[in-house]
Every structure is written in C-alpha cells, then in structure tokens.
Image 1: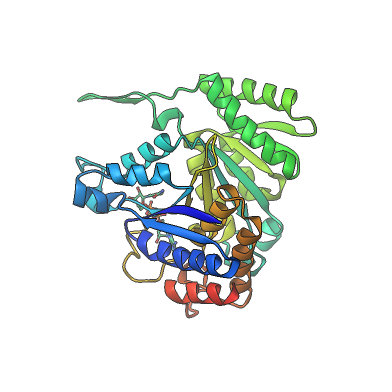
Image 2: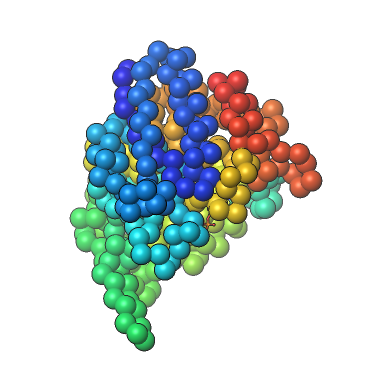
Length: 351
Ligand SMILES: NC(=O)c1ccc[n+]([C@@H]2O[C@H](COP(=O)([O-])OP(=O)(O)OC[C@H]3O[C@@H](n4cnc5c(N)ncnc54)[C@H](O)[C@@H]3O)[C@@H](O)[C@H]2O)c1
C-alpha cells in the first residue's frame, strides 16, 4: 500500500518521541512491503518561531492531503499564557480543520507494568477501557469574554454533536463488551442534561445489545480509581474527557504509555500520545516513546486499515516491556532506565 503520513513533531519531547515512531513506521513499511511517504511539517511553538503561526498554511495543506497525521506534542513555557500567539490555538484549529470530533483514548494495562502504576495491582489487573471524548465542541470552543474584573467561557453543545459522538461510542461498545458509561454533571449543567437525554436515545434506538449508564463526573473520577474494571466505553464531553483521561493514564503507570486517535467522518485521523511536551525533561533523551509508537499503530489501524501491522507494533511494545525495557517514567525507583532511543531500539528489534 502507498500512503502519505504527515508527521508533526512539535515542541519539547515531541521531536524525540516522534523520531522513534518514524523509525517504527519505516520498519513496518519494509517488513510488510508498503510505501509510506512521511512528510515532516512544522507545527506548534517551533512553527510560531519560524512563521509566526502555529499552523502554517503549508502544514495545514499537508495534513489535509495526508491519509493520516501523527503528532508528537506542542507547547512550552516559551509560548505561555501571555504569549501573543499560542501553540494550543494551532492544535484546536488543526482538530477543527480536520473535522476530528471523536477522540479515542484506550487505557489497557500492560501486564509487565502492573507494578509501575501508583494504584495497587488488585485494582488495575485486567483493566481494559476506552474513552470517547468529544473533541471539537464545548467550553474549549465556546465564546470567550475578558474584562478587567471578570472573564467567561461559554459551553455549548448541539443535539447533532452529541448524536454523532454517541454513535462512535455505540459502535465501539458493540465490538467490545457492550457497555457505555456516559459521564456528565447533569445535576447542575444544562449541556449535561442534553448529553444525557440524547445519548440515552441514540443507544436505546440504534444499538441493540449495548447498554448505557450515566454517571456524574465527580463520581466517575472516584470510580476510575476504585473500580476501573467496571468501565468499558466511557463517553464524555471535551473538558471532562481532557481531565479524566489524564487520571485514567495513571492506571497504566505513566502518561508516556498511552496513545490516542482523533477521528471524524472520513478515514483521515489525527494520532498523538496523550501527554504534552514535557518541558521538564525535554532535550535529555529520556522521554517514553511508547505512547507515540502506539499512536502510530492506531493510525495504521483506523486510517489505513492495516490491522495486522498495527497489532505487530502493539505486540512489539508489549514484548519489549515484558523483557524489562523501561524508560525512567516506568522504571522502578532507583533502577537504571533506557533512553528514548534505546527504548525505540528495543521495540524495533522486537518488531
Ligand atoms: N496535545 C498536546 O500537545 C498537549 C497535551 C497536554 C499538554 N500540552 C502542553 O505541554 C506543556 C506541558 O504540559 P504539562 O507539563 O501539564 O503536561 P505533560 O504531559 O507535558 O507533562 C506532565 C508530566 O508527565 C511527564 N511526561 C509526559 N510525557 C512523558 C513521556 N513521554 N515520558 C516520560 N514522562 C512524561 C512530564 O515529564 C511531566 O512531569 C504545556 O505547554 C501544555 O499546554 C500539550
């Protein structure tokens, strides 16, 4: 297969972790006889420095023409909250331009990493859940006002927006254990009441064999720690999903382990690890590349329909971990750890 993949390394540890994912993609192409054309394009803070725009026109064009987009991470103290142009704005724009409204964040615990989680083994063993987070609506995209003495952020959702994301959750649940947990704050928020009613109707009318339960976001935050095995597909809005997925990442041991896929109505998706640019460790070559490598696997699965190749990458990551390969974030305290490159090497040999 011939495929175009746009690579947006971004800022901080972004270039370090995407370099490893690129090596894996090249190895997969060679092993399975594909031609992947990998276009590395400027994005985020580094693009602001060069072009005064976090999403330059040629980067956007390259992403729109690609079959899939792989992103490292963006942001950093250099482009903080008072900067005139911010990298985060570029990412929100890119998601909107690509029309990727459904963010899939799987959280599966690698057996080899049961001891790396701050949560006890008996709680996390066998956890296998996936978040479906709405990505292009809600408070991040609402009208904002800023005055001397007050500021506002509007949270708005339409019925159509909730319907389409609920269908993504329903389809996933059908292929998995058949359970959707919709998370909201419907005891206080009007948008949450809309989410509850619409998601209930869509699952009931269109997904026989799938059940839906509703949970307040504060209770969900607790249950994710106390009984994470009870979740299958977690459906939620943009802000709640942003927060809960970071919490859920800790079940897996580290933010550095988890991939994500942002999908829309066509096959082209945006794939990225769930972590940020980690300025505290950037440039030291110690970041965990697994989340980005596993994101490349999701790209092969969802955008290119290459299930065997995706599984080969996932198996290689599991094998490397089972053989004891650890970057600092998942290594036992005091133990020596691999560099980003050495972790990439180990996964490459496992592949
Ligand atoms: N999608 C994105 O690109 C994205 C997402 C979240 C945050 N950010 C941006 O990243 C910057 C830093 O944000 P933050 O510090 O809140 O979150 P972060 O995810 O960058 O880092 C949080 C902590 O996790 C560690 N960590 C993260 N990824 C790791 C990895 N792969 N290996 C090992 N350790 C890892 C970091 O060292 C840090 O201690 C900010 O500018 C923020 O806006 C970007």
